[in-house]
Image 1 (cartoon, rainbow, N blue to C red):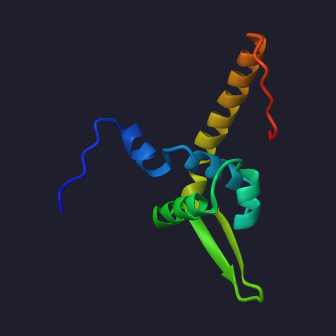
Image 2: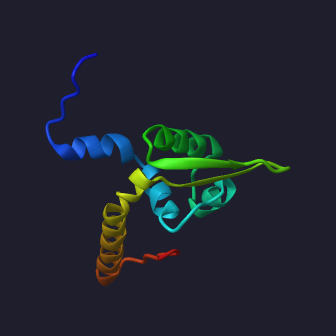
Image 3: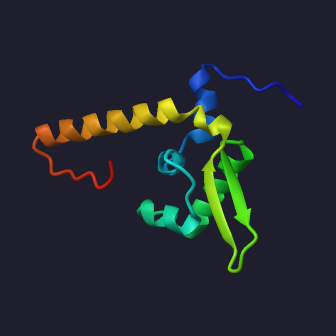
Length: 117
């Protein structure tokens, strides 16, 4: 197996949580376990296939845990793993910066709406 080389540490971070959907998924999981259907409703524009794929990738990176309940009908919930919880301050910072950016856009006269806080 060849050695993995990163030029700077943020490359390792982005390899795991980068892309359009993963940060949004992680921000939606910050406050507790969520069922896939509820997560899909919270994330505008994501397809079921993409949500499933991204959750599997985050699960294989040990960032997210999947819990299945032995019920009829079956119930599944996703939540941040203990390791994934270590991203909380990063996700909080990204959300805070997003709010600042939205306010900056508004101050520039752009029409912007934030649905969730």
